Amino acid sequence: MNANPLPSRTREGASDKTIKGYVHDVNNFLEWWKQTEGETLNAEYLRNDPFALNKKIIQDYVIHLEKKVEISTVLRKVSALRAFVKFLQATKIIEHEPMHALRLPRKAEPEPHGLSDKQRSRFEAVFQKPWLDTTTKRKRTKEVEENVIRDAENRLVRDRAIVFLMLYAGPRVDEAFQLNIGDIELKEKSGMLRIRKGKGFKERRTSIPLPARKALQEWLGLRIKLGLEKDKDAPFFAALRGNSIGRRYSIRSMQNMIAEAGKRARIEDPVTPHILRHTFALMLRQAGADIETRAKMLGHSIETASRYGAPGEREFEKAASLLDHAEAA
Image (cartoon, rainbow, N blue to C red; front, side, top):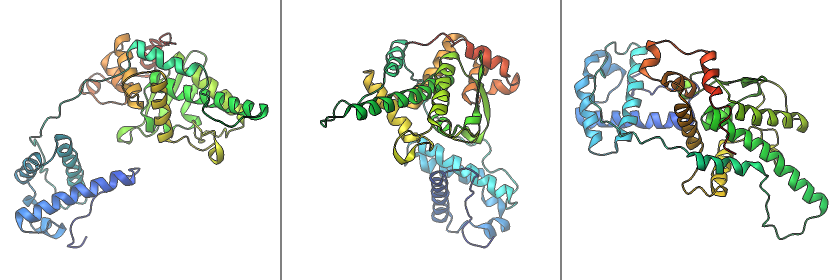
């Protein structure tokens, strides 16, 4: 490494947007350092004086940020700086820990917001019949009309599978997007969902309740009927229109479909994939699933999870079975 400003760390699997944001935040710190210390922070500088990077100066930087940006931005920039320090430690440029016991501002956590039972009933009912475009002014032939109806019915089966999976198994939208055929295991009385790259690039497995299993099984049957790829690495949720048929159904398309469903159900607040995930978490809690199992099924981290051991598939199946008859519509 030369005497130029220190490079940022990149993380395997991180998106370009994540990497750019990380580089931007680290460069902000390096610029502040130069303005404050009158020196350029680089590898040579730290090798000569590693303790120049210490808790006091980082705490000063946090205080500086608090005066200029929102708490969420402060925490994001500190997170980038923490990752940068780990890079310095991994490359043996420093060996001490300059960020231990930092005083950080606390971000007020909003109350989890999910659909009420009545809203969920309305929302699920939207997926009972296909969505047909009735605004076209051009008269359709009988054959064209039949094709339009069939395509709408096919999309309904896929979209219902997406929504019911999110509502009853709780994957994030990017996790649903990344699902492959081999990640879904359906049996007569149980089902397992494998998330290969969850938040923090962690893998997890969780059970699938009956309402989601039924919707997923119907979609799998339709996939076979349509001749879509069967390989275990093929995208589970596939596009069904135009030149994109068979390709991975995009995150934006999922978001738009869920938002449209919320409008059709006449739910006042916008419905998003994250709202469906919150709904799943709230249903689990109301059904009596313990906090440790809920955290593991959602891919969250809680202190108590490490104290009492991780729940296994039996616990997941028991918790998921609590929602087998919770279908609202």
